[in-house]
Image 1 (cartoon, rainbow over the protein chains, first blue to last red):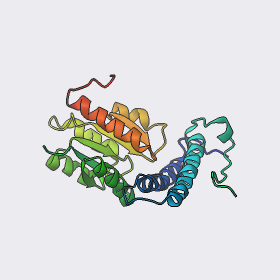
Image 2 (cartoon, chains in turn orange, cyan):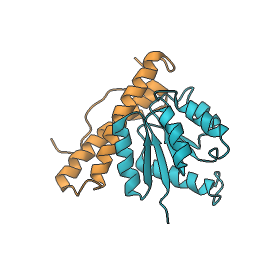
Image 3 (cartoon, rainbow over the protein chains, first blue to last red):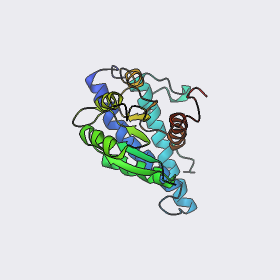
Image 4 (cartoon, rainbow over the protein chains, first blue to last red):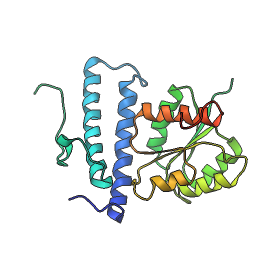
Length: 87
Length: 132
């Protein structure tokens, strides 16, 4: 159930989750962009999966905490692993 | 020519580290402050070209830092980009009214942040109006 924007719980979740997500996002992109050395194709693909899923969590946060509507297919607040890898 | 100096104010050391890697890779000099008090001190002693400011800080929040900045004629023209984990409601409009040039929630795309930095610097140097 979405939290009420402006509530203490909503403020707490926003701060904690967005900071943690920002760290994943920042360092994932640092790796992908080769700022910490070049990645192999496979490593780049795996970090890409992490970033893609971090974006999905962000969409859910935007929608649940700030009322920002996500894309229709992401509006269920259901988080599933996104991967282009074949299973 | 001196590098453009950016003050990153955030109490989270991992966020500071990530921003410093990204900003240094884009040829900016990066300074840090982890609370409102050290941020105010760094503004006075270092006179950065731009500030990336979190809102939730120990020792007074980011609004306190912007208020002090605005009260100082020598510092009031320094552009401030707010980068926060706080909610939009009650924070975005307040930050913009307090003098922030831009407001972003974490996480922000690097390209978006770097574009906002370049634009804010161009505006503060008189090379561009902000609505351009």
